[in-house]
Length: 320
Image (cartoon, rainbow, N blue to C red; front, top):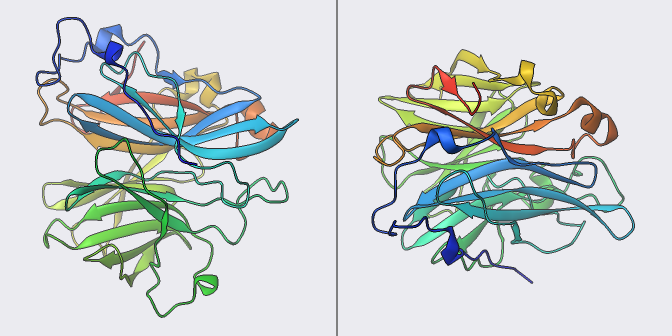
């Protein structure tokens, strides 16, 4: 059964209206941490969409249940001010043969919202998802009601599902030069890429050397890719999807954050410079502690956190 996220009326600040969102008070955000994991639960792989004054964050939620058995879900939470967040709501079923997780992003396609995500099967208690991990989409008319997951056959319709290979961490992006052409990035032998015009029939394009959790923005006449190498958030740029150059590695305040000193990763960047109440790039990411990674690599006591920037070069966060 799919459980839907509900936005509480009480999350609207006093005196504000949905049509006129109040300006974000950056000084009021008390900590970079949005959700804090521990030995029993973890929050990872954030993806965020901003619509009608509401930030909706989707993420992987690991949780011990049934006398210590570890399950993972795709969950969601909402906020209007980046300070107070509604408690997690689960969107996907309890099933270790599936473990729907790692939402990549939410895009508008026609008259629907599309959320991309992965399966991460651990039927025998594996630490990491097995070879049957695949990528999927879910559809919604309103960002609240979500349909059943649909498999993305990104290797093309002629490739049998069992021959597609293990793939995780999808991300969808409309081509900057060809409206209506959509790219899907996913982790397989680096960052693989396929394209489609209907999100149903896909053509494999190629791969580049990159880490996992790819996120891609358009900046002027270039694509900017954020990805996850062994540690930190790597940055690449390209004008044509074919030729990519490395332009940096972002580690934010990791040196001062024990909760992220095991690994800082899964950077998702949202461009809200055009929204006057925000006016910045936002980065959502997760951090794992050394202790957490030693206990369980795919859990890691994961915490979701936030930073922001005016130019993708200098990053700020609460307490800096």
